[in-house]
Length: 103
Image 1 (cartoon, rainbow, N blue to C red):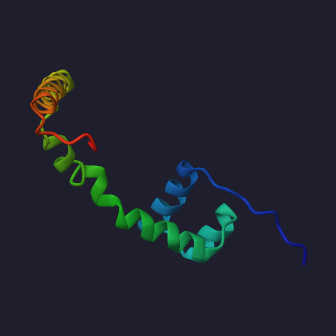
Image 2 (image 1 turned 45 degrees about the vertical axis):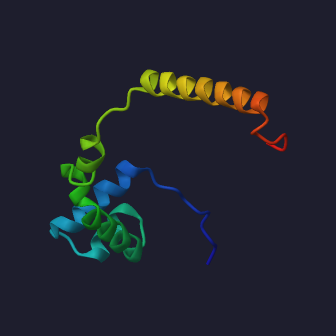
């Protein structure tokens, strides 16, 4: 028996086969013969489909979208302000001799 080259299936094909398995109108053996895929592979795709089905309805993305948007310009302005203050205070302290040169 000759070995078959390893095949890769696109997501649309996997979804079609997994949905056919979920419907249950045909047995795994019939689906395997129809789509030329091993029954264990169909079972794995079916489990993956059932496991990730909740994500289709947006339950996993609700927490991500609920986070407030960050104003990057405001944060950059604050960083610039704090850097300016830090540089000013470092200069004043070094002139007064209170800041070591090891910094």
